[in-house]
Amino acid sequence: MPFIKTAMLNERGAARTGGSSGEYINHFTGVRMRVIGQGNLQLSLLSPDGVNTSVLTPTIMQSTNRISPFTLSSFTQERVQLQVQTTEIDEVFRINRIILFAKATATMEPA
Image (cartoon, rainbow, N blue to C red; front, side):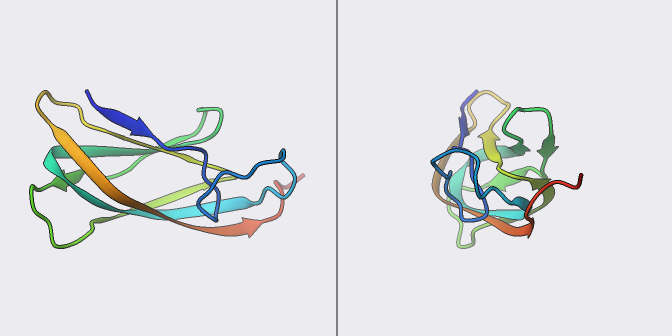
């Protein structure tokens, strides 16, 4: 089944380079995608080590779509990876844009 995984993303939407200095705890609140296709699109947010996951509400795809569907989430992590996949035969998708909504909430984990 087709799937994609994004790079590790932070509140700015891009993976930081240069080590872990400056990492904040982020609250990821939703995903908006410009997607066309057939079938249901399964979305998951994954922590860097894969221990914490959040399975989001599936997106029903259409061959033509005038809106970009928004999927709510509530996931708190330093960085996150978005996994997008289909689970049935003959389901296909084309993603033109992914917007991940996030906000830095803390500078470090509580001691």
